[in-house]
Length: 253
Image 1 (cartoon, one colour):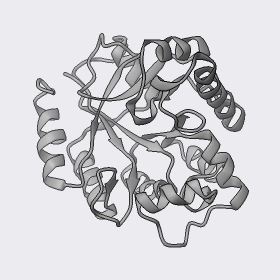
Image 2 (cartoon, one colour):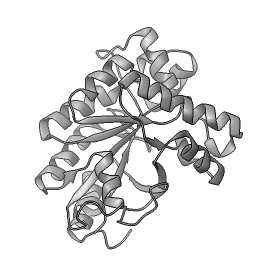
Image 3 (cartoon, one colour):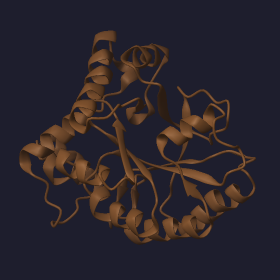
Image 4 (cartoon, one colour):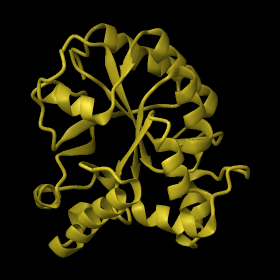
């Protein structure tokens, strides 16, 4: 058996880019997951599985969301509550800090991904990114965990040792201070990493690293190179890729 770590970003109404799943599609995907009896693991449970601490015959998946978009609170949290599912969100700590200065607007129009990037560049992170108030609210449900996606979302394979230390150690310290819990896990922005960045992450105190490399997770895998599956905005794709493969034990990647 193997476990798919599913990778999402935006959950909003703007169809057409590769990082957005529409809310109605996401809800149906989660409904199918629940109906199939697939357990959504917490991050610690996944790492325990990798190290052989959880039986290999479980039907399970991990839900991950990159970047900490505001639409995760609006369109993801209610679905997690409805179906009692666990999720992991990787936070860009500088954006969360900036968003807090403006105060999140959870009632306004949700921008597209391209619009979101422009708003962030213009200093309006509060319109698109989760602030610490909402992060804590989501964390307190017991359904959502938050870990590091670095401080500023730079390509880590292109950074100096000093820059890496600031991005990785700095974000870890902010996460732990803000949430008052350990932050042992990191997800690489853009999937950009190399051997140097892995070593710096280990030195910073991370015990597992999530990539965008395609594949599933098996017992005995390297926890510093966790593969994921990029989720498509499609119910049929979800049935064929996630549900069918889970029944078959993910024998193929």
